[in-house]
Image (cartoon, rainbow, N blue to C red; front, side):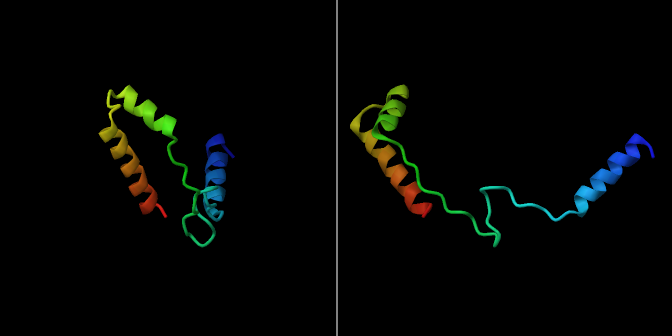
Length: 75
C-alpha cells in the first residue's frame, strides 16, 4: 500500500464516522445553546466613547440604548 493509499483510506474512514457536533455551539437536538448575556460595563462604555472622541452624554446614551436593544434581541 502506498503512502497515498493509506491517507486515502484514513480519509474515507473519517468520512464514514458520524459527524461530531462542535463543542459549545449546538446541543444534541440542534437547538442553539443559550449563553448568559455579558454586557459592557460603564468603564467599557466610557473607554469606547473616549477613544472615538464621542464622550458626550448623547453618544453615551446611544451606546446604552444599542446594548439594551441587542440584549432584547438575544433573549
